[in-house]
Image 1 (cartoon, one colour):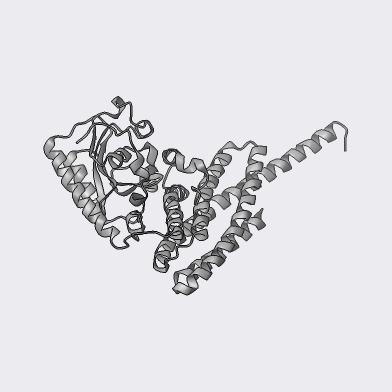
Image 2: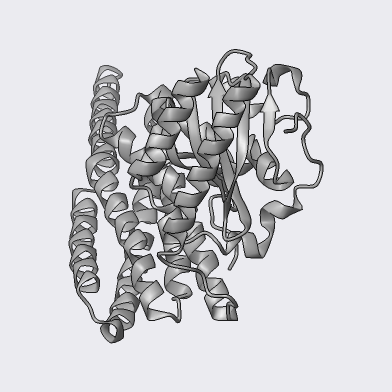
Length: 232
Length: 153
């Protein structure tokens, strides 16, 4: 287990890793099995937030969650570059942070926007690739004991197994042709834009205050700021 | 303004009909229907952008910063999603089964986009228009009264 942040983040954009993501993994409908695992993680650790966070191209997508504020429940995502989970994926190792305000290398956005302080994340692996982090988060500094971390690691393994099962419902082709690759990227851009739409939808339905709406948009500023999808 | 919004709503109906047709289409029919959907979507996008431009200009004129902020937020989100939808149409997956599965995400996104516009964006545009019209009417009444007081006609 590591408390160090990796300096090399190149694995995040690895094409083979990104090709793992397809419909069943990025589905927004809650999966009861993953949901049970994050609920157990929050109970075991006493940390209020637990996530199955998939680190995609531009966002981290919360495939399962408990304890998130309403704007993040609506978006189910934040920008990838402001996430802590990106470091778990890049290093393919667990990451423990007792107090995020004392870690100068961490992105500040989520610390300032949501008051995140403590974090413990374990790699999620699908088809031999690290796709995300099974993590717990607290708004106050905290340290987890060895036995609790062991339990969390076991839950992360179960979450990986479940994700693997979901991924095999629609396995990605071994070798993509040029047109398949373009189609894959275009589709992923669409799925990654979905959190912005979900935020607008929940706001339009009166389920988010304007302040919550704006905070959620702020957490997706990288996505909204470009005003366009990546080039195809 | 009312006519423009009504036209956009009719576009929505056309898009919904095409989406339903795509839902039930065979693999061979689906690609043709997606092309039709893309054409319809592009035309609708252009008309919507023009509506946004008009309302944003009015907001600036009457210095309504709240509506302007909201409109800009909706416009940005709508642009990001529309560009992504456009990308999907331009690069249709050659694998028919995968295309069908992925199309579901596109259909959900388009339906959601239209619902948001009907619930929030169009009413906002109409409200802004009626507000600015009454402000302009009041302004012209004020100026004509001032002009009469000043001895003008």
